[in-house]
Figure: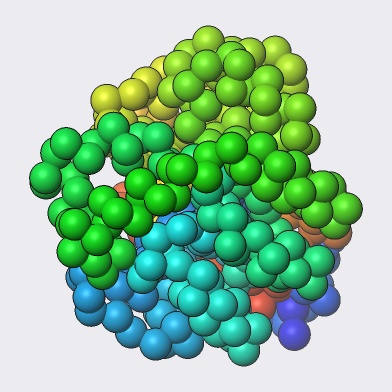
Length: 375
């Protein structure tokens, strides 16, 4: 069945203009019959593409020690994403040396749940591999080879955690997430730190496996130009959450995409006190926004950028659709053009809120007021 979405402002070729959009055979078509959707007064936009979102962790473990089955958590996550207009979502799954939520056991359970899931959205895996997780490398390599992983992120949070061991509040936070006592967590991380010498070889093996599958790679929290050069040498062509402006500038000079968080834009700054993403995006130093820890921020961020008055909504939408598609090497989506995937979100700009979502050319979600617009 095809669709005709008419009466709204359609984002095509970099501008928002009155028009109509046709969906047929799962893609955007030049014309077609079938059902109609009245988009009068609404915006017809490419579906949001989120290359790093880890809010699914709250579906798995909403409170320390309180967990839900992985299959249930995946269904819940997919439903929330869909209702926010996110049609392609890379779940940022941290595979860490920590027990509990980010453990190897949790990874295995989530991979099995994703194998069994059939969500309407395109749900993918962004493997955030913690550098010191030496024991998990065989699983990671096997899952990469099996096609279960779609994006590789090089994480290294151990040094930052080690610096916080003198802060009982921070230790309690990490221990609670891992399901350990503070004393047991201290013992664990000290043992992990003792094997730091094996990290470079582990990174190389991970990078080689990713390259063999043709997977895009990204670095995370690059603090210095030396950090960026290290990961660039491993093949990471995406710079995620750079901690210094000069790092972002270096990545852009090399033609690489730079990712920062949509919550940063919506809140007006980083919750960690780092650079503000919005002015960097306006200067071209940030090219991609990701939901990070809060999915709703991805929809709100381009509107927040437009309200600043230095970037049109059409241009700001590239940060959450066309650019993440390019960074993730997805040439079949991110824009509303003939022959591309029929991933479309229809938005009431007064919210903004999602009125309808089409995934792969099929109606997948109706928000408030959506049903009365069907024809």
